[in-house]
Length: 349
Image (cartoon, rainbow, N blue to C red; front, side, top):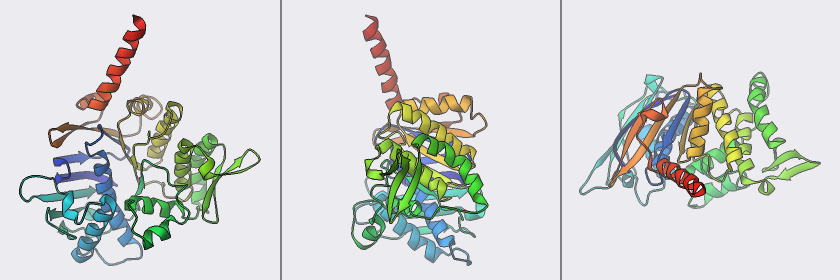
């Protein structure tokens, strides 16, 4: 489980230190403040370590990690030409430093790279064990409709999609679990299937929602908001979102109406209560309020932490706290509140 992330000279951040809790972690900020970067960076490191753990018994080595981390950063962030483009842009050369700490300290990883680095990073904190749980990354777009044939196409052609799409498609295509863990999965799957009005089915490399009335419905014919719910249902059914896992979700509010967003807020906290660490990036005041209301009532036992990003010239600063009131105001949220005030005043005249 992710414990903290420390960065120096990474993209728009001169320096940042995020301390995560085991439950819900919410990163707030307007567009261009680096929210997605703070999701992708720890995800990439965790994904590399979890991939190397599969089928391996030997301890991590610098040679393996330096190559794999550089490749993953390049494929997840898609900079032009070299990984050094991820270093903060400034006059002269600079060096980016990253440290990802886990609850198991012997799995923590530290590395750095120069702004001129092409495809190499230097590991300066070598873990003695691999991270053993595969993380999940949900991008802003649903992926069930592009799943058919996407992985072989991605692996054989140059596509301008970052590698989180491929990783998530691979998890979506995994077989559903059976056996002792099936009962545990069912308790978390039922609320999602009740909302969807059916089960997510996979047939010959395509996804369907069924039963939908008298027959199953092709996933491209299902509304996009429901397809995002269907992705979650599929990941629960395959065991990708079991306890001790980690879910990174970029803007859950994208293409969702407020009614469905209320359900998403509850589902996010259901996942946290099931033992999954969740890191969400958002600029939705509605989602933030829904999460806060639920945390004060039905999910008071779920640990939570909030991070606010604010742009200051060419840099981004970060504040954090256990409650929304502990963090600095976020511009995008201030604008939504201001609009609400103007709307009320207009009708009061």
